Length: 97
View (cartoon, rainbow, N blue to C red):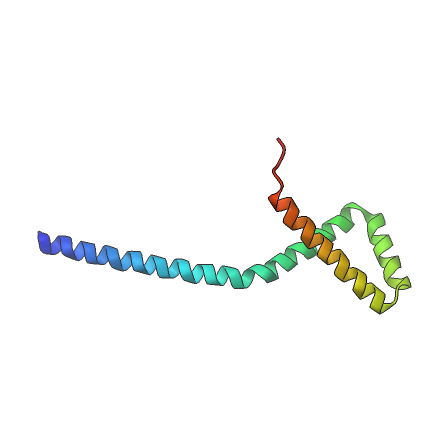
């Protein structure tokens, strides 16, 4: 009976180490996929905002037509940075109930 218990203990250790390796691999894969998925989420959020507020879409398109490329890229970077700051603050802010 003790031989059987030893086999079970060994099998348990193998399974525990295999699970730890799989968790580690899953964590790595999640980290590599996180940034592209976050970008897609941001794009979908902008699309949803344009669908909810068509005037906002009109203002965005008209500003694209009027503004030079350099100034447009400058403002796009500023807006994206502001959005990132807003998202970081919103995650840390306690929710009201």
